[in-house]
Length: 454
Ligand SMILES: Cc1ncc(COP(=O)(O)O)c(C=O)c1O
Image (cartoon, rainbow, N blue to C red):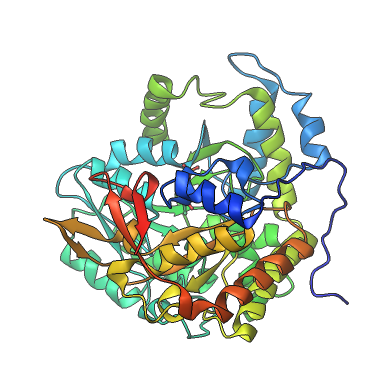
């Protein structure tokens, strides 16, 4: 058997743009050495994100034609709600336009000064929405997650001892507890069912509602099936149902395991909290039976949620990240191990050991990846998380490059091309220099920063 067999055939194609190395140098220079500022049509393979970039199936496109665009009480909403309830079991399903809208509504209701919200690792938008209310977002992931070479099966787990102590020390100030599956910020690493169960138990002991950030719940369910012995005979749907059964609600961006180009939901069991959430929804998103989405989106997502739980698809998905990670490791490139569900993270500090963090080795990697192969990836290093204070650079603790794989978009041949490009970069790594920032914004500087090679 080949390592990857795509469980689909291709009916509609989207042509890719090929550029020459000279053209790419010109494009990158005009973009001030910031891949975020490159036009998408100048990119051959776009691994910037897996969010909203999925290819929809023929069944999803067919469902789009059945969308009911009624303002209130649409058939499409009922279908969507039924599917979300089948998977999660939550009483109230509140549709929103994407994950952060669910976070914004939830945090507006439970956050506030003096409050603390624990998670394995908060994703940036979750953290931002917590902090916007003046509450504190606290990361309690296990220490093993910080060792990139350690092959731990569930590096997304919460440290239960830390959580217990945290809950005792902050009694009365913890409005909700969260867990993110899979843990995007920590490398797309899964959380075990055992950990979810124990976290739920600890939170319940302190009477604190448990909310799952469920963006990649299906990928997490697949890892549980593969790595947690008692679940090997259970379906991804059954595993997901059990995961959600321990929680009191969920936020979800359906741009990931919903196969949507847009969409999300906030789901809750508590009637009063759900009522408040719907009131806020009406203020900014829309009426409770469409939230921030069109009826056709709701239809496509109801189908997408089913397809994300398909075993053949999940096996192919995990095989793709594993294949990419293993080929890079064979070349000598260090990646975060084991590979997560949606992305492979390259350790740029060890790829370019001669480039100090203050000269942005991971940023140098993403620039070289574009120059060499027209491939776009994202830096998770000192441009994204470092700070410039009075002209002095304070570097981040890691210099990673995330190669995120859009769902059902690229074939094994594309992945081979990515491996070959990185192998060539590895052979030529001694000749690459770092960069300096020539212009930056005070917040989230990576999106708009201008840089120049040294
Ligand atoms: C774990 C996690 N939570 C929340 C979000 C936010 O979702 P959205 O981009 O749909 O607002 C993301 C998006 O990447 C994510 O990965």
